[in-house]
Image (tube, rainbow, N blue to C red):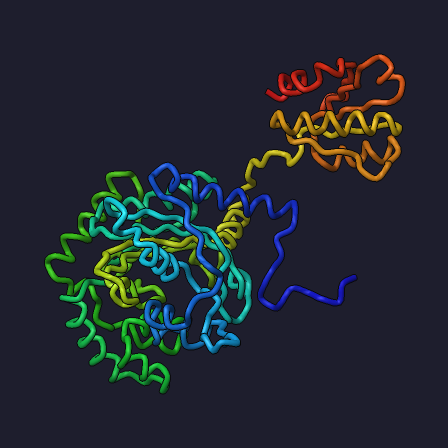
Length: 420
């Protein structure tokens, strides 16, 4: 047994469970690929300042949760705690916003890192699939992304998730609300750290999960009562477009989420079967983020969905994905000559697109057939000296147990026909 273990708060993806994670990633990505989103991949670490500016210096992510390091050259780097800032940085660096018509539509998948207290559904290393639409201010774009996430979850068989929706206003109306909220919060019995947050970003206090704080927020002013006419009209159209697509949602006037860059539309996907870590994904509009990190004005919207939490949600609902077997055919040679012939045949089957494995290690027939069973293969090809003398192999149906000889030259077509 190894003396090393995965670091606390992390996990290994190991077969067969890893197949479920891959299927979830593919299901979330599928609607995006059908909607004009191109794949982007960014480094696992970025300049610390990118997240300090973009995510927000008052957020728990920046103040408490980032893994940071100093390179030999003195650069301050951080393992990426979220995807949006990195994707926008990459898009700006590559001038994608100048390459053609806007919005630039991108999707990504990868691992992210936050130093948190580990518990079920909250890890220090976690996996997300995300989508960003950069460079357009259009309620239809906000609605599109919400609908695409909804469709992805439905395609996986999830039913017991809810969509929470709110508007955080813009540069016109939010400062007025911010001042009113600060006046309210300054009168509360709050600890020193929270009082500092009131002065930097009071909306973050509304996202505080501690009961001692939440109990005092019952009468806090609501942003919806301060929205300007433009923001009201924008939010009304987002709601109308989502409703027209038959997607149900709940208005949540207290939804602010944990990142500073959100403006106007903000939303969260929650699953009540996950306990305290009920959010499985979320996102919103971030019209000022590009300017925050040194770019031009590029109104944008996006989301990130947690692969880990989506898998937990599937388990909570008892949903079992219909995953194909990793192997369709398993080859069992009996003797050295058969080993050479079947090794070549395995290559032909793989070239023809048939998932095929081989009984490696010189196993006897009994052990090799056990391996074939464990592989989940639908068919097994068995050949010994007598079979090769007749230029045939034995093709066995692992479900029915029926076995029949097939000429060596016809094996590939016979297998493909049966699998079809």
